[in-house]
Image (tube, rainbow, N blue to C red):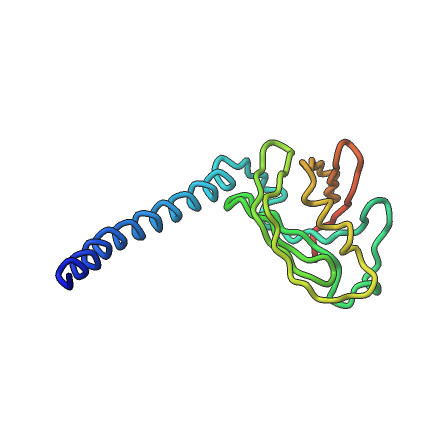
Length: 158
């Protein structure tokens, strides 16, 4: 009986280890595929790429530096790597994005969760996480739209 019990333990260890390694490899490959789909084939606009854009108006309201203790809200579009990052004037955010023509589509967005007074935090993440943002660069003002309605105006941070 002890021999049979030992064989069972050895056999299950023999099966379990390769099975766990196989599952781990499958998981890693799946994550890499999702990341590649978000990052792959992005259009890179050198006029926007890797520039810190300060948000000067949000949903038709001009923003003032005095309203934001952590500085003016900003967004950086890393088109080469398919990423987006910035802050809402209080919390920082980062995530994946695809860039096609003048359209920006974000994936999951991670944020810090600091408590702040005022600001644009409530609507901000809903806006950048909407179905798709389109953009237009008008001289030195970057304008972001959702369904043809302007939601943000931004200027390059000095």
